[in-house]
Amino acid sequence: MSDTITLAAETRDRVGKGASRALRRDGRVPAVIYGQNKEPSSIHLEEKALVKALMTGHFMNSVIMVGGQRTLAKDVAFHPVSDRPTHVDFLRIGEHESVTIAVPVVFVDEDDAPGIKRGNGVLNITMHDIELVVDAADIPSEITISLKGMEIGDSIHIADVKLPKGATPALEGDFAIATIVPPTVPTAADDQLDAEVAEAQSAEAEAAAAEPNDDDNDDDKVSVQKKD
Image 1: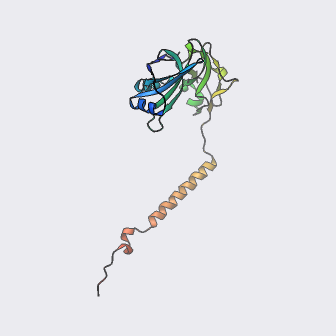
Image 2 (image 1 turned 120 degrees about the vertical axis):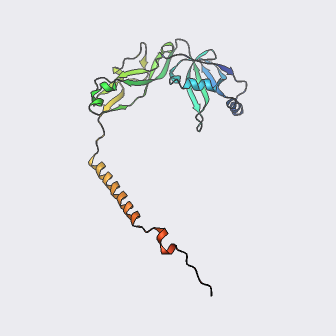
Image 3 (image 1 turned 30 degrees about the horizontal axis):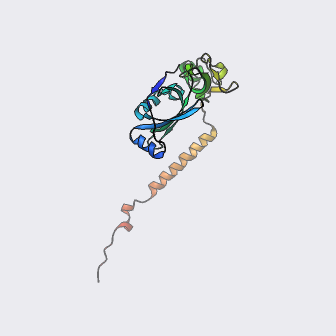
């Protein structure tokens, strides 16, 4: 189960672009808490504390206590140049409320997969995280999937995965999560293209070598004209 994250928060007295810019200059990040049919709460967080929480790697699938309110992070906006967080949206939840949340997938036992170890197969991941419907008190930090015994051509579907107790997939059907695919083998067309590129590069090199050096040309030398 993912750990609960706690963030201190203060109420925003003013809203708007100007007020938000002033907060960011002071090392604070504007945020909003909404949900449960209550009025949205405009707050601000310490940027350093928020960045530290973001660096845990499970910020988006953890219960976050923000100023004493139980929430989930729904969106984090970042500055396009500095990549600093500029705004956060939080959703209020109950302690045992059923929530839909994306949980990251972690693959293990790659060395025990013959298709990868001996067959040089490649793990083609089609879903890096899986949306689950879970109790808010039992949100998993990740879903671990073993590749042990897998051969080239084998696929992992959601039915093959042991999910945490009480968790169900948000998507219907037995969807694929990953497949062991054969290594890429160069074709005759690839070989021909490589040969054409090499030939063109060789021709360019020969042409460059054949060009006279401008520094040795008589045309580059300055002739002195005698005055009458």
